[in-house]
Length: 637
Image (cartoon, rainbow, N blue to C red; front, side):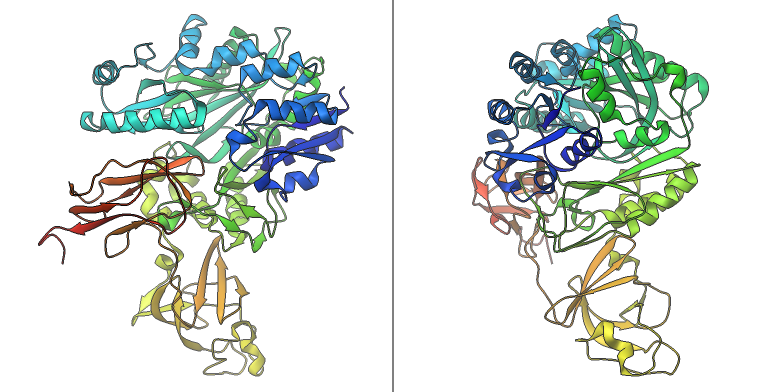
């Protein structure tokens, strides 16, 4: 076994790999960008090396800098984590050429599965069922448009080198195909350096089922059962579980056998995932599951597999990379209970899921479940990297118990001032359809209005007042109002009961008169007092500000005057509208790239584009006015 390992990654996956390495007595080495100088993975490593500026292309994606760090520190092995260089065959070859152990599949396997179009052709030869579509070499817009029409709408456009939902666009109508194609090509070029795409038939009731496989490079391949990753938003996974709900023995055998055949077809070594799409319109059936792609690396959701099998997948990666065989045979791998994982993102569900950046002034995670994170109190969420800040993982005897445990855990999350999706996760996990196992990849989109509702939408209205309840202790004097000092003290003091507080408050910027009383209309479980007569209430993962005066926030889209402001720092990647152009409400005006995703700022009403004040390629700061749309005469009151 090697004695040192460098992790060519950042955040929670670097911390995760370090955890197993420490247990096995292996020295840990981190690499970091200037933006991550005080990051958790840097602090947890035995040694850390600065490799460049904040942009990933100049640091984490620079293979030469990573290799130089490995050589300088005497690293005997490199673990790539996921993302960045993890599926880069050239990098894997360079690592081996430098005499360093590559903890991952053979470069030939990465290449075979790295491009979705070529991988599908290979799978057909191996007898693995694949989704109907187009994987041809002709990438002209005319050919792709014709193929989409042949397949039939709706279709999925996917970057051939893509992953993680990047470079993937669903198109419902022929007239929207050109815009969807252009966006997929831009994201493919930006994220993977390859603008080529393939087209697939879009299955109307799809389930995302994937199988964890493991090979030792000697022809031996095992599976560690399936995961269901159907709860997605815009092709980004949100909640994953193992096993898959509704999976019977016959369907499990069909999909796991296909996964093993797929891995053997590329002589696979190490941890990998074979992803399938299932038509769930009539439940899971052996003949209604098709190969989508293979991820030749460890997956973000690997902890749920670890929970139900008792296997440390990172340890297995270490052992196989060091030349050892797979530790267990197929019939020795158990499947026990139910596991679920929720991804905690720095984003604002109530504001179109826009990413949220900034300092984590208050950061509290549940302490009774597994939490994989790469941040800590006082740390920063940067504009340069993925917005996932933690994963919450639970394991229980039944699916119902696991869902309840995970909902409780997400409800205990307290983060401020960075916004998170914790409350959104609670609502997903407690939704009757999810509890019943009635899930597909369209679940969140279908229920989004309810799931993404701001905390205030849950507060009952009566006489134009919001009703809230605090954890104010029973009154025995004026101290009963202590949690709300700065709001004027107790009003209507009653013996042996919480005081009734009445104040003119602003909650999340919505100017209303709010009463705090002993009713149960809106129980607030946690209150964090800030300066300037402000406070933060936490309940079921949601956080909202309470203050005695309005606090205008930064522009996050369209103002009432029609000005479109950057909701976060980023780069302008498209400006489809021109000054003087007549546009309909919802038409894209400017497209901003931030945190590895595109965000379209759209016309807030029917009107005319008055100005577009930015150019493609320009970097802009939060709140920058990007364009102004004015209403056409008579179009808006």
